Structures are given as structure tokens and as C-alpha cells.
Length: 330
Image (cartoon, rainbow, N blue to C red):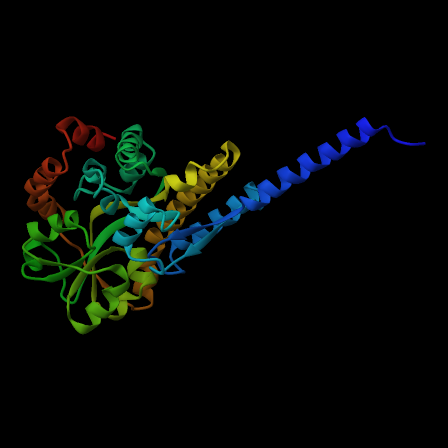
């Protein structure tokens, strides 16, 4: 029995539409580049890999994320520039580096603005932090999707630090962003900006004699090989954002945007969990393995010394007294 032409024609038309749709979906499949500065053993990278796997599964293979660790796509300043101009698709960057485009974002990194990690973690999930994200998004046109807790910064050194005067004249490495200068300058140290990937060599060669990093960084980058003391000042709490360029987000379907958000959420929760676990366990491990010596700094003395600097920093960031009070009150 012959098939009527109109039916054959309709069937053919549907087949063409289906194949065209399939071809369009395939042609738009993309591998996005995610760049960060951390070692492959660091929780941020571990969480990034898990998030990339989830994203690919969520999009059913329509898209994927390739993770580039250890500054392969540039240092943190370079990554912040590249994501705005489409040179990289997704970056991890701290609130301080990101704040170069919107200064109030860095208020959460003011020295001793948080009493402890628990308060910092409440801030991570707070409405005021999300408001600051929105301000940054508006200023840059890019998209902060989540933030992982990066850790409490401590001073590592070759001489013990127990009070602010012990840091006077100390050549201390700081990340290459101006806001990091507040703490060392307040205690009379000599801050020297050095990119994270270059810190080990700078310490080894004596370009700097001290550094400030969370314990997981000190461990992952093996700074204990070129430093004698960890001085647990916990003077600064940092968060690392999952930022996606608008050149990516503007082209994703609603379903794929949701997948990107879920991946960012997984990264934030996983990295925060791993960092907190390392902070709780690394000191005991490093002391048991005799990797480095821990001191007992006078935190109250550091807080008193830093108070005027924090007040000035808030003004420099354009952070209102109300904003500072909201952050401290969390």
C-alpha cells in the first residue's frame, strides 16, 4: 500500500526538525575553562573537580568544565581580568582580589572583623554578603554564584611571633592586592607582594622571611619546609568565589544555568567542609610529624593594635558604619 505524499512529507519534515535540533544541541556543546591558583591537593581544587563532574552529568554531556589548577591560566589578578574579557570562563578568586572592581566586597576580609570561624561561616550564608555579591555583579557584569570558606590566615615565620612588636621590620609576603597591606603595616612589618605560586621560592631565597596563609595552604604548598613557625593569629578570614563570565551565563539555557548554579553550590559546600576539617586536624598532624612549631600569640594585643587600621580600612573601602555593624553583628 502506498503512503500518501502529505504523510510522507510530514514525516520527513519532522525528521528534519528533530535532526536539526540534535545538531544545534551538539554544535553548542562547550567545554568551559575554570582557572585557579591552588595545588591539586588543596580542597579548592578537589571541590572544583567534583563540581565539574556534577555539571557535566547535570547537562547530560551538553557541556563540561575543564579545571586548570596551579596558576596555569594566570595568577589571581590575571584571572580576574580574563573572566571579564572572555579569556577564561570560570574563576576562583578571593573577596579581596575581586574587590578591585567593587571595594565594599572586601569588608569581610578586614582584620579581626570576625571573632571566630563560626561567625565567618554565618557571614558566608548571610543576606549582607549576598547583597555585596549583587553590588559586585552590577559593577562588573559578571556573576558570583557561590563562595567557599578559604580559611583563617596565620603568620608563618622563621622567628616566633607572640606579640605585635615581634613583627616589626619583618619582611612578610602578602598576596598582590593593596588591601592585604593593612595588617602588616599596622604591626610595623614590611609587606612584599608575591604571587602564591612564587611564595615557596621567595621564602627559600630569603626575598621574604614570613608569610600569611591559612593552614591548608601552608600544608599543601609545603611552606613548612622553608619556615620554622606557625603563629596562629587567625587575623583574617577569606572566602573564594565561584565566578562565571557573562559571556558564558548569557548563552546558557535556563536548565544549564541551573546546572551551573548547582555545581557552584557543590563547590562551595565541599570546599568549606574540607577546609574546616583540615583546620581542625592539620595542626595536630603537623606537630606530630614535627613539620613546624606552633606559637601562642597574644590575640588581644593584636586586636588592639589593629583597631585603628580596621576603622581606616572600612573608610577606604567605602563601607558604611551600618555595613560594618551588620557584618560584625552576624
